[in-house]
Image (cartoon, rainbow, N blue to C red; front, side, top):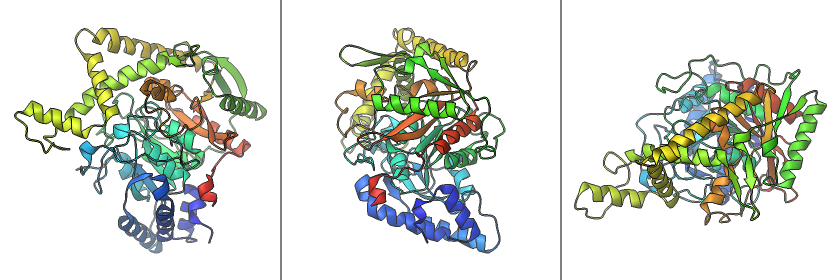
Length: 502
């Protein structure tokens, strides 16, 4: 039997359903891979080996009894550690939640398990999903399987690294400003940020409530489509969940898209973009053209990316995003008061204010503190209109630009990141430079749109290059089909890092 960890989620589910492999064999294969490579990659915060084997055995028993096992029957998956589960801990990779056990489970996890998935454990992230490299984790930095001296991206770096290193067949992440797509790009996997409201946020620990969305990281577009279909749908427990039927994401995935119009946003192709990435994306545009698509130039003026003489980047979208996200973070993280739950200082405190202050100072990392303070400042009296309210107006203009662009095209083709994966420690002393690692992704969250990151080859240094496809709201079937169209025309799907090839 070939190595089960080399199969896509769909291939593995088909083998298990046909009886050519068992769910227990699949779970043990991935647990063996975790034993071998996890000490190097450090993608997981917790691995639930015994529970995973029990889940797998139960699935095998159902199949043996002639019962349905679901579209993900026996497929081992991982879950980002800011998504609540009623087993294990939900820490958000923060000391303030180091021992927190959630009293309820996220809807997305419920749906995964109802579809037969076997949950292997929780993956590492930048603390409270605030970061672009997974170096802000309160536990450890995750390493990129392609080069362990480099970051896997963030904040879903643990999930992306786990999929790339074959430590799970697929994973859930969350995306507030690129936190699925950017690590997917750095690790050579597929990542989808669904339309805001497509997937329930119930059970996702809030960072930026108007921006957050749960989505999949997977080996190829078909696996991403399968997981998206499984976790999507209306949920009355999430007031932002849209009551809309979920289409079959796989039904027409391999059907060629006729009269497809691909838009190239002129503002995204500048000196700010790495030359190899620029070449790869224009090569992808040519591949689409050869497949019958029409390539049109469009404009997103309020997402323009500028670069000064010193090489520093700037963007309306990035500035707007970080004001909105930090303001919402300040509000959402006020609940961690050390009284109801979470870390409490061991120091003697004379009053409740000192208890709060000491506990939060000890429990939160430097980046989280920075974002809370900046967010509180932008919401304070005298500054609300100057910063937060102005950012909301710019957000509307950014969304208007996308609406106008989609009158001329069906899908936008653009970079996912300005560079390939950078070295560990390279940007940690310069938060502004780190923030700009998301310069091509934040406008998607500000506009509530779906965005898909797909591998587009390797750089001369052997690092993954990715492209991003963006579609109108609730256009996931078209977006995924467009991604599959490129994937089939290229040799970039299921890229395996050297550590996997041996």
